[in-house]
Amino acid sequence: MSIFRYLTAGESHGPQLSAIIEGLPSGTHLSAGMLNCDLARRQQGYGRGDRMKIEKDTAQLLSGVRWGESIGAPVTIVVKNRDWENWSEKMSPLSEHRDDSTAVTRPRPGHADLSGVLKYHLNDVRNVLERSSARETAVRVAVGGVAKALLAEFGIRVGGFVTELGGVCAATPQEPLEILWQRAAASEMFCCDLSAEIDMKRVIDAAQSGGDTLGGVVEVQVTGVPPGLGSYVQWDRKLDARLAMALMSVQAIKGVEVGIGFEAARRPGSRVHDEIFYKDGYHRNSNNAGGIEGGMSNGEPIVVRAAMKPIPTLYSPLRSVDMITHEPFEATVERSDTCAVPAALVVAEAVVAIEIANALLEKFGGDSVFEIRRNLEGYREQIRNA
Ligand code: EPS
Image (tube, rainbow, N blue to C red; front, side, top):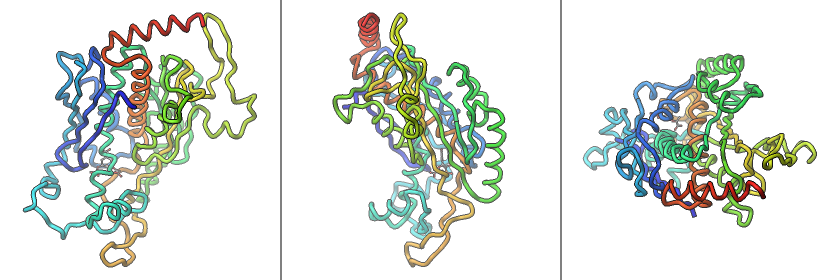
């Protein structure tokens, strides 16, 4: 069972997004400012729509933190929607504001719209799209920021970059991850390859003028992870399985790879498996496994990739059917982005951080940073001479 658990609530155009985190140990240094830098990163990236001009996402920490440190109690986080003031009647919880004439009835192919109204017996697609919107990822990024803060207490860092966008592939230079993270942070596409970045912007411009949208691939890495997080003994304890679930839970993600992923299926074993060496401890000269063998971390950096499909709202809409008349119509056009792949990187980092935090707490106990540090140091000592 998860130790670091969270739930989110809130609609895209409701008053706010909220999250409650259970299981954050005491003694984690935490401030809203630490969460706000990732919230600002999530709003960036070439190809975003007008909503990002309205919002300036910031987190409020409303419980579980005192004088800059967690106290072991549930943490409540709120991210306000600035756009709420434009929607307060349309999204009002009060019955006297009901106006069925504004109902959205032409579901967008690729979105949750059609299956959502069927499943929940609704007659307005808005009741689905408000919650299924990727706006929810704003508060998930804040939860991920809390997980990152916890991991930082133990020297574990999470970062990443965009590796592909709209069919443009970026090269990954052979440099330390920390350098690549810095390079990606300075790029408008969160990409380490400047010439690919130029091409990415070009394909976004072309998609935008054609009323189309683009997806891509993001890669997340985690450094400083001790070996032995997760387990091989049971299916739901495998670290790679849990990371895959976390990544697949992010809106618009359609595929996940660990290490070289699908490429491993094309190579012989001699060119896949990372040979084992020993010099003052075990180490590898390659990391095709992406830091996970047998469902457990192996001490190498964790490397995972997620593929994001193009956003389903197209300004040149696809064919759909009106849900009242069943006549063919073009899908509803909601304000949207041409491309949100850089934002998806920040969300992917967040959900990966949450899973690694969870696995860390399972292995090393969970009540205080002090206790976890003691357990982790003891374990590192124990395996040093193994
Ligand atoms: C998003 C907010 C949304 C969209 C986007 C992500 O704002 P609005 O719907 O008001 O334009 O820009 O959501 C989607 C593309 C989607 O399909 O759900 C955000 O905050 O990231």
